[in-house]
Length: 93
Image (cartoon, rainbow, N blue to C red; front, side, top):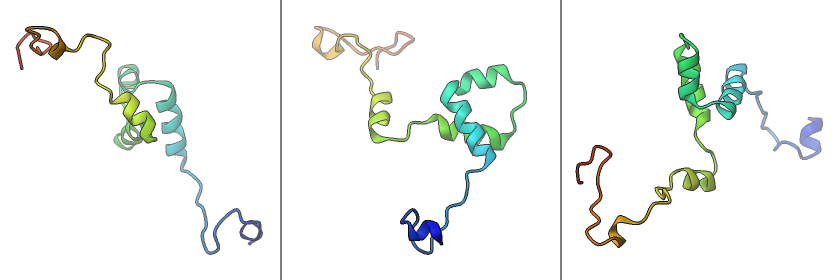
């Protein structure tokens, strides 16, 4: 009631604490790529894997745009004469 009186929480709303699983998964995801976690540990319970993967993805729209950019710094193949786009195996799309 005191927190609501101070304006910290809307009236009638309570805030539940984050689970230990979510806190640990978020900290792991902040420090290591999921691939490294998989390589390092033999057995990771499925719920733990799901939460680490969940926290591994960016949250803000700016970060999503930054990480989903397809710009690799190479020249635009369309700008190069005869520049066909090729797949990693060398086959043209």
